[in-house]
Length: 459
Ligand code: ARG
Image (cartoon, rainbow, N blue to C red; front, side, top):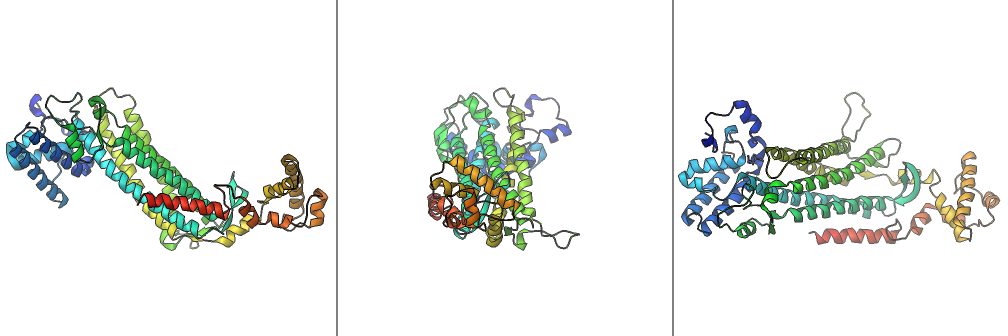
């Protein structure tokens, strides 16, 4: 019999039960649901809303149920509809009528809002830890590659030289913002909605703050309609996870390119590559491809939940039960992806000679050659034109800026001297970019210090 069957004269259709029930997926909220119920029952006892002895009996009963669930000895049944009714029904079965007092001054609407926030708060902690581990690996990779010169690209065309350390620190900074986004999200969702009741609060003299304290919430929600109605905290998390996955997906795309025979900038370890069933020579970067592919799933969850919420009148509507699977799937996906991605990077071999070779072809030092003339007094726009002509000459005559004779240089501008060769050497190009944020060794050292300080501050 359903907990709400009193008003009904016939049973629900079996197909309705199946569609209506969320127990198959919200059972994973059991821990939060029980913790919330324990805190609620204690508060009811403390406030004299139920007898203290009854509250104690309820808490003991819930503790037993928790133990059984964790031991795999609890049956979640479809007819109990959701995790909230499943546990309440079992409690009454175990401790008798006292169990029926637990739901005083509470609704499943504030209960589920509470459980979901608690669950997400703890998931955010875990996700944040995974991102921090990835940043630490990026920092290590950067430390080992401060002298590894590589081309940086715009439009996927070789643009200017940089170092692999500088490149890794770019991703470290993106991920650092992902960490702070997760922290902001957690901070905003850190409010207990319990006491909002079904939607307009409760007539009982509850103590919302003590329940919030007991459950580790910083605050209580300020409006009961809002407390049960919004899922913006879940949307915010999905949006943060989408941005994080976008970063990982771009990184994956680069790794896939770098593994290709055309680049050969890196080689993935066998443990993080897969083979082909037909082409014996293949070593495929499947993990990076899967990370790129799974990004679509996480975006899908965000779009899905935004769409569920977009036209719902206040307060609770059953549509909102659709929040959980989307969020669970996104959280599970990111949790699965991050450690593998991190381990893959840690085991990746960098090929400095190939990176350098790619940086030496394609006039990546053309800007520096123009800057050389500027330093000798020529306005930048004129210098730019001279170097443009010079580059055309070089490409037509199979030369590079490093191999062109000084004599030929001088036919383009009398300002060229022997020191032009130092000016266009890749080491000089990198080292001269000592602006904060640039690839010069001092700039990179500062960036590494900042990332290290960030990691230390999060320990
Ligand atoms: N299983 C429901 C959900 O996840 C719990 C809240 C049900 N509330 C209600 N008024 N039917 O949304």
